[in-house]
Image 1: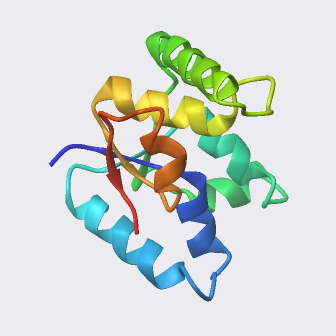
Image 2: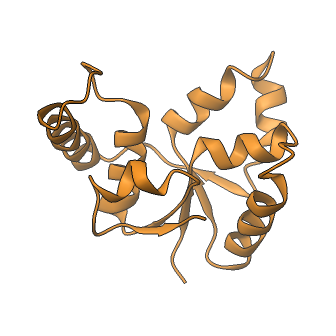
Image 3: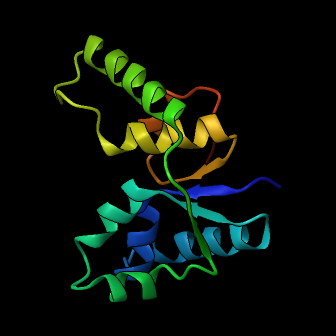
Length: 134
């Protein structure tokens, strides 16, 4: 089994005890831990940071022994840019690449699976990406 990049929404389900999604997200994280491991990147870390007062609290929620931190590969940045261009040509309103494009591109270029609840946000722009989602 390959490594799994975890999207912010799944992590937030767990740390916020989301009534609808916490159980599903916790089960999926546990399954991925039992595989080859979990990966987060600076985008996920940044998106999570707004929910914590300190880096220490954030690091407690995302322990390094469970979530391997990985920098974004350069070719993920260019792939995110091309995905954003496709989004804009399809009528998308955001004028700069958003986190989801970087997260999806990172998983795609590294050959990781992506654990997310936002399957539709990634499928159109990263058709070769293996997505774990409801």
